[in-house]
Length: 312
Image 1 (cartoon, rainbow, N blue to C red):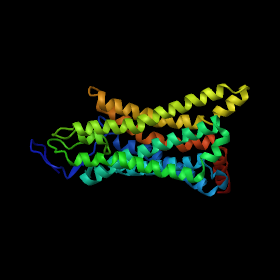
Image 2 (image 1 turned 30 degrees about the vertical axis):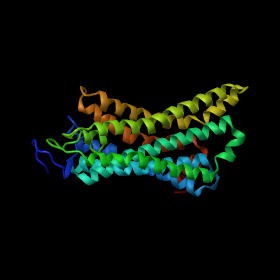
Image 3 (image 1 turned 120 degrees about the vertical axis):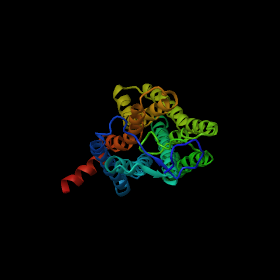
Image 4 (image 1 turned 90 degrees about the vertical axis):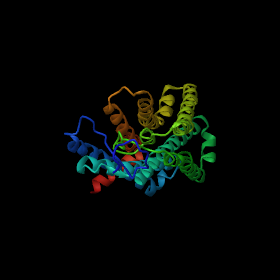
């Protein structure tokens, strides 16, 4: 482990933190986090299994939901075991290579999730605004292509982040402010210029998450416009009710992301605990809430889960 000094070095490891002023309660904090992780794993795993095995759910909307659940499984599994090992066993050291890999997974999977949410918004827009063209345009092969494009987009935009970290020189502290690795957290430990990292990181966020959020907002503007033109109140409520689950999931993803970005870039005077809490909410909220929201709002998934519980 490198010792703090003024000599530049490429660290062999970083030190995770993430519970400022809560060191005494750290062991007990792991239990609710572990419970949330188990709920996320079971919930998202159940969604993937049900969509795969229930033939009536073999439609674009549910395939997108399956993709969302698979991304949440990967995202939570790439962060939570390491976080729990730090909280329970005080395993604070993470190798340089493992940190870069975790950083890439967090950012690229978040980009994939953002793209899938955009695709789901487009699906709702086509179903409500162009119902006659919906089935012919959004076919199952097209859905598969969108899923592959979402993965490629996440990899291509965020693979440069760990490569940009490799060009930096570090000195002094190697202690991170979170219990996992984020690009903005690691780059702030560098002694050399991080201008390229800042510019590219902000550009990637704006071109992926920022653009997706704008297009989702535009989709819902068009949806609301179309819904308001329906003749009866009952039809309007029925049409918009198909979007409620997706809206909840969009808010659960983008609100913590925006909050974390604002805190990292403009919250220098805030207590470190605020950054930690925002970071944990950003990683835990979507995988935890997505299966609960869609399980509660989707009849087929709810019935299948109830049938499974009754038979066991």
